[in-house]
Image 1 (tube, rainbow, N blue to C red):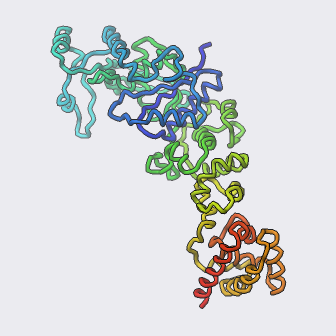
Image 2 (image 1 turned 30 degrees about the horizontal axis):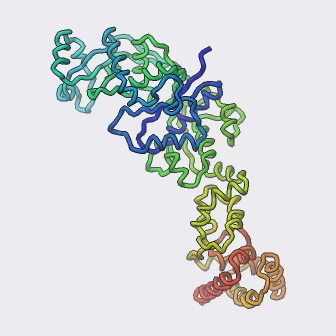
Length: 484
């Protein structure tokens, strides 16, 4: 049996979109599930869209995602080069295009832009009329000798049909009359995306081609090229569209459309990869959280869905939170440290304590700022926050509690969590207050937050005596003005 060989063939045009990541991931999983080969090929023939540094982004993304390729620009498997512009320099695509000219399956086209524009209808669409197919050999040679610009077009039959099979969508048939004589070699000598794709996939031994379903309409064109050469057509796997929560196509404007966008927002690579695998596929047991090894074991490309996959950022956040919880304290601390330092610049507050408070309470690392930022500064807040119906407390009672508790805390020699808890517990009992009626206003005073990681006395210990007392005094002033 032929070894399964897949490829990821991105164009270096910027950050890697989630759809591109899914294509890479599914290609990787198909190859690895079958014990095959996963290859990276850089398709940079569209020089106008080339973005400097984009190849580095591709390599970095694959590395962070754990998708190690077996063949690629720096791993020659004997079928290189693996960069299309380098393959162009060898004249590879032009040689194959000329073979099709010799067989009558392609032809030189010297039509000017003006003539091509004249074929278009009012809506801007027009099918090429095969004008140059009928040029004589002498006319062609004269045009070439004169240096007249040309493209090379595929000669598609005007009658009959072309049928191709996709593993997800089944057999699809189109009338050849609907297929234009597409360009194989552009006027700049570079191959078109479609032509280079087919030639490279064949020469590099690709058995399975994974791509988005927006390429379904192009597949008959690919097959016409395969048929013209007499080459075997690979297995096609067209993946469903990825939409946002409103069912619109996921776009760059969403702010989380690329892998690096998500990394910048504090998501873990493992969680992104796990979630991306589920954008169009689910294992039979409906397990959601899976390592890359588990995905390799369970992935079955024949079970990919046809219907669009919704990119639900809330679901990704939940999954990322589960991954964060499972991190070792050491790994979490290392990853979280830059976020901790940004949220709380004051180095007198123990970073390890802040990390411990954060790990089980965040879904992304960016959440750290909102969770613990109050340790750096009390945010602006509404005094209505002091109201807690269950504890039967309100701003007026809170003001009374804080005024009474302040001297007790000022006199405290031990400002540790346990000692403070016992002190305030006794204080509450002496005044006939419930513990919550004391702890709630103190916690609110020192944090300015309705929800905090840790209780009142734990926050007091972390902030230290001086800062804690200063915040309580400020809260008394704020409440006094509010209560009137």
